[in-house]
Length: 358
Image (cartoon, rainbow, N blue to C red; front, side, top):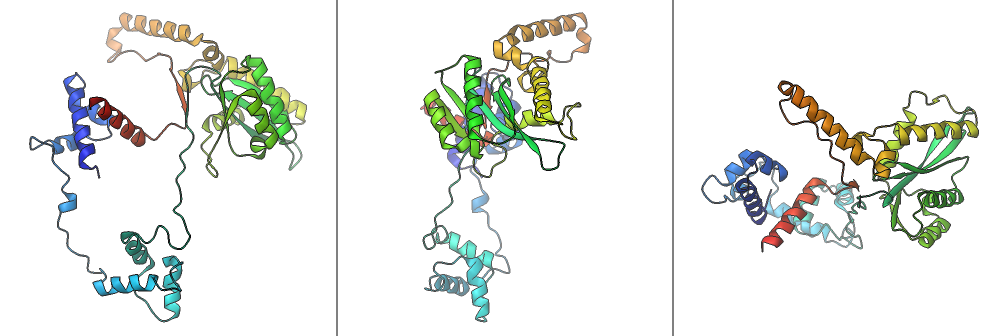
């Protein structure tokens, strides 16, 4: 349900975009509403308010009485129940041969009376948003992780440490070791910084919450190097998607030895070949099908410009084969790590526009 001020703002933005040449359907789609909904809002000449809160609805037959509601409020305030949730109150009442209402009814009434949030010393759980970063050039945001590579012996795994650049998807550092250790992570990050020649430059390093990533000695190293550390939320598996994506690409290569590597040297040799392929040959869909090396060095701009010219010439040669414009080969300007949800983003954008209008 959209409250009246947000509805008025949405109509104002849609009408302004429409006056400036934007199609009504496109303007509505940007705010995640349909054209039919917009037309219903403005059907009477003004901006119609939401009538659902004022609709008369018949009372459900199974609705509890006022006396039962009051009895629930009295019960939950008793000393023996004051610190308990309804999931424990209702069974305890049943043990006393008492049944007033279901657990869900208890919860609903407590919420309506604002008695559910802080019963006893309990605190309302806080929703933590993922850390979000925007990379507009190479070596601004790196992500890294560790994956296990199976050996020939059951239970034997080699650990692949891998760092990728968020903007270009280039693998800027990797090592294969037999153990997960903060010392290995420290050596890897120092090598990557030196290879990229960015010592002292601002950099964000994102990872999950593994022990090598959270080790005290590793944190001290990051502080010395001026690197800002960033971590996934606890028990959230998709806050480090770019590293996970590279690992999936690696393990689904046709030549990947799914039966296991013969030795750590074999694992390192295979990984070296994969890194070369991924960096110099693989045309990544997320960066408009250029290689990570091309994007990392800036060559991708000329590559994409040439592609665009080829498509334009093809369209001129056979215009009947093109019902629309040619494929968009513009460079991807930026890459976001864990971007905000579109609804949250739309709310912030609308508020920003409103502030500018005022």
